[in-house]
Length: 429
Ligand code: NAD
Image 1 (tube, protein in one colour):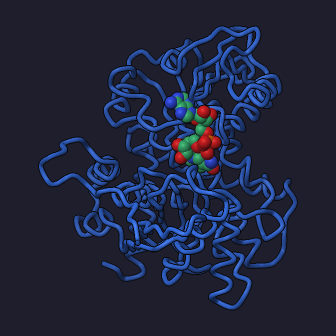
Image 2 (cartoon, helix red, strand yellow):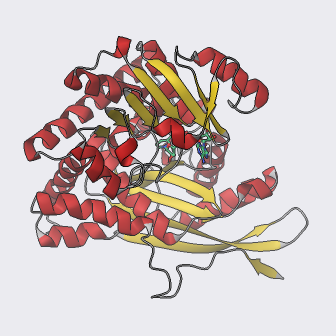
């Protein structure tokens, strides 16, 4: 008997009045579109993804049951190059979320200046409930189902929430079997042994740190005297912590899902990482004072790096934020209402589409290495990443100054302008 695992899609019209992520993505787009007086025809094209594939596919479980799973791939825009964006495995994945994330990827790639469009995919599943073999079956089946719209020159997926380099290896292998060649360049974020890039793991945190260094120059913040709080100690937060420490910043607070640790005289990355490895958390770090995630955001520091969850800086706490600079390591940590309050209070926010674009930028470098079959050293990759991030920051900053808007809106205007110009010259409108 075939069992279905898919979530009910959106609530019936009129039942749920809460804004969806897609509503938020369109709202952010609309703000920039209005300010730049974007042609209404272009607005119409960019408000919706070009293509959304929804698939239902059976997966064989270890106990012999066959479960039916649902997955999506949303391709928002490919005027600047092949579609690019992660695939997540999570119980809350909906078509709406995937649409929003694909739109954000279009802007992120355009800001970074990497020749890609925006896409995102997901499967509605709790991967923690699956065995290794079940996860492999699911990964291969899903990729096989979307293989007709992906490809090294069409759409190049990458890891996202609860997918990793192993998932990418299965995806690549499945696609290569179908194509009857070794298609390394069909996904990025692969293991090194099959075409992954050096520097990919640390890239997002490194990018966060580079954008902070660029912002500090403009804001005349002396990083050697600056203090910082980092929310989240996962991939992005931990690398950002380490690179900021190397840049001379004193990180005084850090947190994970269980709570935070604060030390006025500064924490040391190696000590925090060792304690987290030993105990599984950073709560009760010796010599530190416990704080909540909410308190961490309102600390009297120069720089704040939210690197965990979305919607943590809202209209309720924005006015209590004391940091002068916020770098969004996470996707979507600040609501549009909070953005307005922060801008009024002269707080500079380096938006997610810029601050955390180091990941997709190094994915681009991985793709290039795969296509040319020539692999770079870690130093070469890091150098190229720095060049990309410094330019992206400069363009977004310049645009925000020209229009007298916050950096998010500046980054959007810059990104949307590039996509518009590409569509125009290609004759799409
Ligand atoms: P991760 O799973 O490695 O780490 C997440 C961290 O957040 C962990 O330390 C976890 O303990 C913490 N956390 C979870 N719930 C929390 C809560 N309620 N309060 C405080 N902390 C909590 O994830 P990641 O890859 O570091 O991603 C973090 C964010 O960065 C996400 O928004 C993700 O979309 C974004 N991002 C990641 C990358 C990347 O390359 N990994 C690239 C771009 C954007």
